[in-house]
View 1 (cartoon, rainbow, N blue to C red):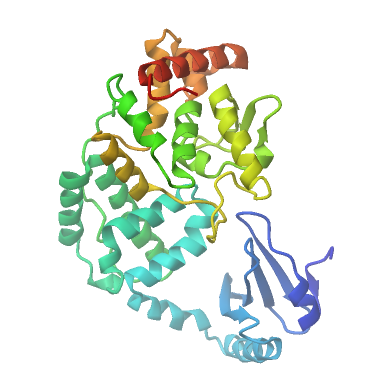
View 2: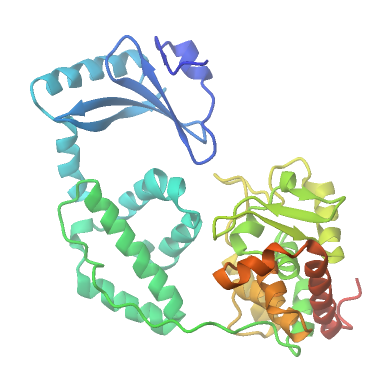
Length: 389
């Protein structure tokens, strides 16, 4: 259907396709002024009324289709259009009601209406909320005070480190700012809370830890964890990219992986080491019909953050203070130990800097592949005799 304006009918609305990933598609009824249907990337459909009120565009949500039927939506749209002609703004009442949002309720709206559409790190936001503030989910937004958030920030800093505390504070600040933008008439309680000074983390797998680490991996029974950890270690890719790895982005014949978009906004072509290639070939026979290399029955269709399984693995290996992100750092560190240049390491890990960009532009995959192979060999040699593959 070329035009997004047509006379709504149940038959047509039911057949409308899902929107493109990260987008929303809007269709408008020619029978009722302003009545529209929003369709998300997951195929969820909701009736809306789109009107300009006092010169400003307003989108009024009428409910999900088919829970709200077409005739019901048209009737409601007629009522709201009449109210608008009387000089009323139907969203004003909703804005006042938002002052009574609970933290948990608003967080779900924040995820669906903002974070999943605009933030690559939305899954990390969700994990932080579950880990640190789930117990506060039922509280009203207006019940939070700056001193309380400051105390939580200090506690997380003591118990989980400065980085984790600062990320949680940033999430709170973003949440309350978005609530204010959407009509919540209160000051942001996370405003002006001083962040901790963060030191650059230098943790990576040490030579004496590798045998125990690989032994624990050899004993791992989780269907995804072992392969996820090894692919993270052998590619140096970020956690979100490995979890979101798709078969369509892999070329197993050429042993390459094209990451469509990384944290810095660019794509990245990575060579695949023989060890990584073997893992992927084995998974292809088992999961080749799925979109993701690490599939799951979830809203996203892929496996989510494996924190609990990760800490269980480390406990079994007798290793402390190692994070999932340190797997990425481990490859870069072992490249440095085995003589790779700063430029090669930066290209491997897709770091961006003005000084290095010109050098990176002259590189091809061959020296990167050689440096990664050397680092991989060094890590596996220290793991001997546990790893025989």
